[in-house]
Image (cartoon, rainbow over all chains, first blue to last red; front, side, top):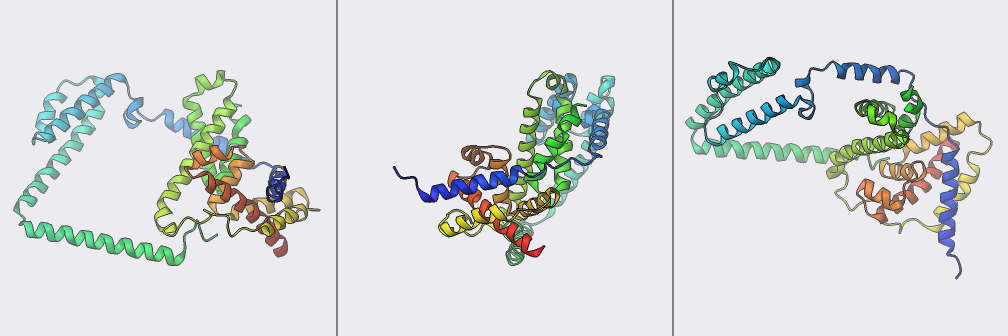
Length: 163
Length: 177
């Protein structure tokens, strides 16, 4: 069977490009990259465990986090969010290793509880019309902004297609 | 020592794919931080270079796909460009072959490297990434299609367009020099 001239030409092109690219020297990493990486490693080594990913926490802390999370979720679902007072009972006798992160969690939940009470009060006092009007206004503003950005982007051309 | 052995390879792979020094540095840092996390098993392993290469490609492609997803809605409202080779003729391929035979002849290494890098950097992302994966990383068409979540036809088209585009850009650079 006769070889296809188009395929032959494309094979020749592939070979030329391979040759051109293979003949190019490899990029060299910047000289300070080693120091940057070592600094990153150093920083990471000194990050306290509660600021790392949950998967890297000690087993006991992971368990406590899981139990607290489930309790908080159940509390919210049952209509009674975990309040600082309820959490205080748990916090009275924490293991020494959990004291700092538990205190952080306590402070965060206090803020969330206040926020929850305020929004609950405000939401309850507003008539339905105001709610629906507000939501419609937000949706319209979002849509208008989105269309404006899309139009601007199309006019100015995408950086991926303009080159 | 471990890092010095591999830092150029990692940086070069990331740099070629992302076409950005700053991004390549960030990716290199992330790769070695991951290597540090797995250092105990990696030190014993013969194929540490392969592991680093795989992680580099994955992080670079993740970075690029995040970027691409962010812009896709705006940039690809029209049918995907490069989905067909109908507008590429035999003459384009012939032109590219003859250009690549001559355009870098007689140049010093540094000059030649600079021109090839500049031309590669100017290619559209889709073409550059596919071209780099094929020619530098020695991935097959099928592997590239899987890596980029594109169809095989689009990958082949992007690579062909990338090769022709590279020749055109090298010629433009030569004329501009």
